[in-house]
Length: 334
Image 1 (spheres, rainbow, N blue to C red):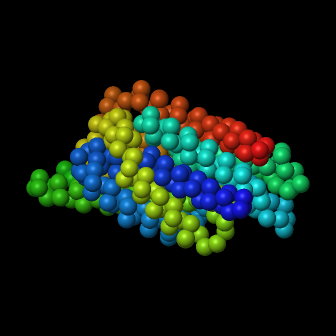
Image 2 (image 1 turned 90 degrees about the vertical axis):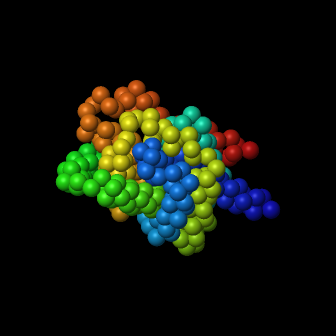
Image 3 (image 1 turned 45 degrees about the vertical axis):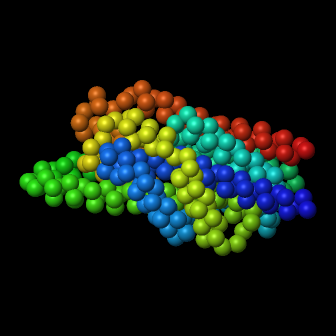
């Protein structure tokens, strides 16, 4: 009976995390398009609902494997530590979900991936300390690779977005028909938003479902599908505030800069997914929005807003780590 209750709680915890991703990270897919008034809020949500599930099912397993199996590793021949200590898995989900929820209420586009990775590290420290008999250990080489990807992610996104805006602007200046130009831009932004939603499913759903899959096992696609559905619920119910921050709080966007920021961020995040690196879609889109805004000059970018977001980024993995240890210590001590 106790084991069944824990399983239910872990499923609910996984839903909680994925719901929070939808609430916080939907802005990474459509925030700039909504802010640039190219997409209505309802149409944007419909695009996210479709493509995020596709990304989760088709490519979510890449990050799922990294988070669920590549950070806290068992001794040779032993079971996955997150499966062997289910209360630690529950602590991971509660810690990551709680911090993302707090940030969403504050309107901060933080990194769900960083929150989850920090929480998994916290659980790993807890397991190695309180259950030394399992022989589990942290894979520091993998953590180093993830850390480097976190640093490079927003920088590369800003650069790619800057280049995209420059290139697209150059070609659009040759279009004399204003109606045709607006139609082309609308199509480009629709493509960028769909691609971003697909990337969100591949990156964030895979990351958030890593601990759940580590516990239950089974086909990754089933866990990814459930995570994708929970993300869509979060998108529908609680995403508007962060969409406003990303869409209009950092810099004022027009259709060209909205496309450059959206597509550039999606391209960079998707590239990291191919290597199983759970990077931040939030960092990518904020970096890309800043890079797109710099095309018109540094004065158009809100350094105050970026500074506030930057502080949240630094704190996120630390808070996820601390919360995971604290919650896990309480649960394991019961």
